[in-house]
Length: 274
Image 1 (cartoon, helix red, strand yellow):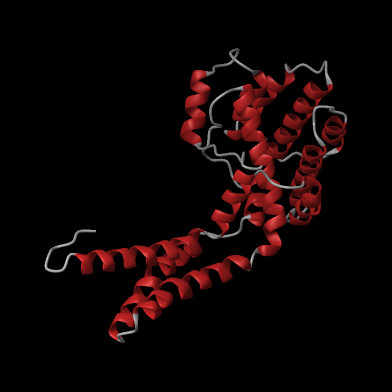
Image 2: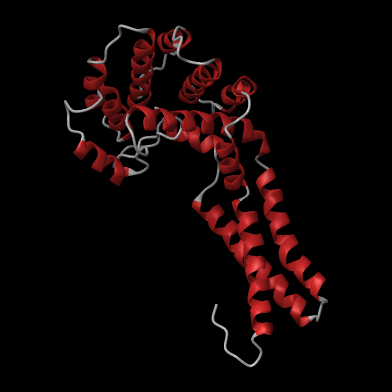
């Protein structure tokens, strides 16, 4: 399973997948709500204060756009020590999504509803057993996934790599003591796996193992970041937008306020709806 393929089934508790994800992408609903409130209320507050104090237009614009967005960016940078680990998880997720599109087609199921729908369209015995195993693991149904995994071929190195990776994921899901040896050997022996993929998957398994032993897995992921090289541009943009989403939200909100003001001034005597 990829970095974003944490079990989403009903009743599945926090396992190593979820713990690792939470360690690399920290935050909770309360914190997110506070940051969003700051992003929305900050520009409005500064805008109203500037209007009340009759600041010149350029100053009013500056205090509306800059302070809150800058504060949100500073808050985002507090987790910059986690960025290498985030980029490794993001790269693995991107690779998994690309592999899914090429081998299965369509977008990878992203939530429980989509998982249920995919399984309903692909009952046992239909389609790729490896794909069903991935989705069953995602839904927390490890026993069913192991039945699919048991029938996977092992004639070639890529096939052995895929099967070993799924077996390791099933072990992690079931809380079995993790041993990365077999899966790592299969990954290293796969000629179809480029060096970046090998490094990322070895680090990911080491991180999951570290989590089961009481660690957080961040060091294992971060250590492999230089071996991955440049990120795909789309992935790089997505990660930066995710990190700076509240700063962007604040800046966009301030620009919207200015657009409202300009429209209002340009329609003097009329009623303006926004």
